[in-house]
Amino acid sequence: MIERQPAASTTATVTPGGPYRVMVVDDSAVIRGLITRALESDPEIVVVTTVGNGQMALNALSRADIEVVILDIEMPVMDGLTALPLLIAAQPRLQVIMASTLTRRNADISLRALAAGAADYVAKPTSASAVGNGEQFKADLIGKIKGLAGTQRRQRGLSAPGPRSATEAARGGLPIARPAAAARGPLKLRAMPTEVPEIIAIGSSTGGPQALFEVLGALRGGLPQPILITQHMPATFTTILAEHIMRQSGLPTAEATDGMPIQHGHVYVAPGDFHMVVEAGASGGRVLRLQKGPPENYCRPSVDPMLRSIVKAYGRRVLTVILTGMGQDGLRGGEAVVAAGGSVIGQDEATSVVWGMPGAVALAGVCSAVLPIKEIAGCIRRVAGKAVP
Figure 1 (cartoon, rainbow, N blue to C red):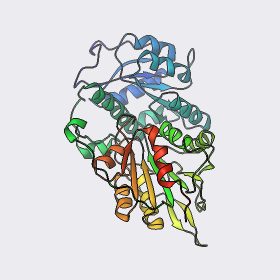
Figure 2 (figure 1 turned 30 degrees about the horizontal axis):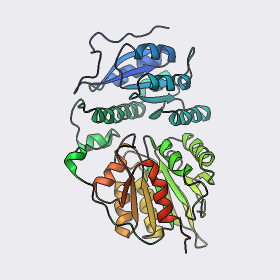
Figure 3 (figure 1 turned 135 degrees about the horizontal axis):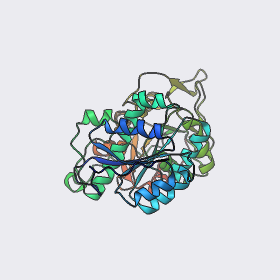
Figure 4 (figure 1 turned 90 degrees about the vertical axis):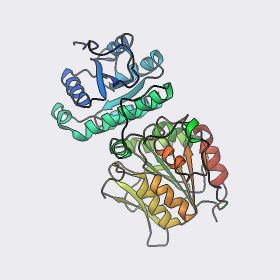
């Protein structure tokens, strides 16, 4: 198994304005080569080195400054789940993206990796030819690398490879460019409505599983309202996510199915590749519907259609929470919630893996609170913890 040494043309450390520096870790030399060619088709990314297992990755990390690691799960000598905490301990600012095929076992391992410190995951095609020809896989991976590495550079005071327009950023799944905190001044917050909401809706993406576990775990014991969640994830992963949420929180949680009635105190997760929306039921209640409509904000499931449907079904008595994630999904839906008289809580920049989605609603002035992740559950309880009339 041959290790690709750091390229002679690359510098040893991150250069302000230089390309994002990536290491690919996979036991298949063919897959490493295909991923490398896909990434280096973008001039803003350079693959510094590729290696065949976790131990080699640790060795390589000591020789070159790496910003993002693409880490396979199943490898000889040292697998990805074993290597993950060692890589992060060796370089705490390192951003790790787990790469796995869409099996139930790998989805479960990927979610365990996210809880252990991985920043994101990508569903790897099942064959080498699919990797080589997978435009969606390539676009997803490049978008995640730029979003994660770009966030880290801003936190370190380093510049990104080059300016991107809002349209380009949204298409690539990246956080829209925003002014620095010192330049933008204090956020403008709306008053929190006094009415008790009938429903809680949560939207999240990159870093979302960890944030969801944190928030819902702190809501153990439950609330009277149903909670609807749209997390950007592929199929299979959302099934496992619902199971992990139920274990972490003790709340009755299910991946939504078409026609499922909405019950008080239950949590519903939008399934991968479907928009989850709310409709009036035949007996006067409300039910969930799954739709294969076009992606919105380049996502399916998307937060915006969920929020629009909730406003239509519940009116002003809606509490929305937008957690960490790339892009701006949830902004238009959040505006609809506020226009109807509901409220929006956003996660703050310091505790977000990527302050794209929550940053979009915060900077648009639709939030009634922008809070660190550890304070969000407490705010939800204060707003929604009373009995629903």
